[in-house]
Length: 451
Image (tube, rainbow, N blue to C red; front, side):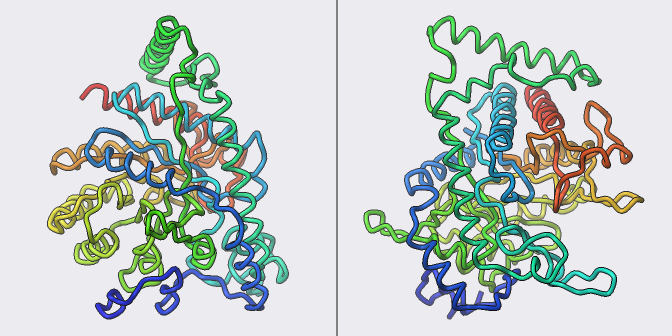
């Protein structure tokens, strides 16, 4: 980032003087401005003390005292804003968190890719089918997936629909948690049919039995159900891609004398927009939220060090999370250099492994998928490489769903390329289904429990 630009006063709109990638082009700027003004007047989706509380917990994860579980859909759709779908997402994340708590022996921070993950980056601005070229589908908050000129036209009203769906979703999540939905931690409520197909069936069953015994013991001693022991905290996150949408929900709190993005607890910058001289980095450097940055093999050490300096100049604990994504075959080569670059910067970050994006491949039939064994291999390598480097891997980041989809192959049921056609529902990237997600948590718990 140019020094003169960086030293200029930050405002929620200062990003607009810099190159902004992945932004839709609206045909009617006046209509867009009216929608953004309306969103800016509406109540925030989250509140500042929740944001600060998450930052404190992430600081503990940096020190190795907690562990971050971040997961959810690659891209939410507006149709996902219905009670059963939301409950299934929350349920699988809660179950995974209990399994990880059992294996890691430390509190788990639960952060969903939920209540705002409506925009997606695209590799090209347009899409061509049978000689017809239209704008790319950029997520439900921008345009519609159907391939017609009317559907692909960016629609400002969808920004308002996105705000409403996010608020409704997170409000329902809070109601579930406050109403005792956390009691679904208890294994008798879990869907464990996949255990019968698992090679590690006995090991998995032992984990489940130990969790059940521990919860039963707590209930017997305390005389209360385990979910009444304290508030289960659950946070929301999404990629802060659509900068006008994020700006509209950025508020200055006088009592804290800081700007907060109150559209979500933890926004992150994606790989395509993580440029020191770009608009996204400029916007993110001024907000008080804990923020994430997706980093990968295409980023050199100097760029990474510059990002860390710009986004966390005061070395604030819990402020910056680096979510690395390489792929099982490339992590051995790329991650050690990245760890060294951050160490040489003299600043602390929270390291998190995203084993999904680097392991995306296409079947001979042209279907995007991810192999369970590659996802697991990257997580295992990440733990080992961080330990060898004297660093701490403080979390994992998964694209997953609570539904019984068939988008990733492998896992206990041994899904193959042929099985993908049965329930391939994603509009963007393949997700772990509920069974694969829970099995992955069990494998991580088993692996780390032996350390």
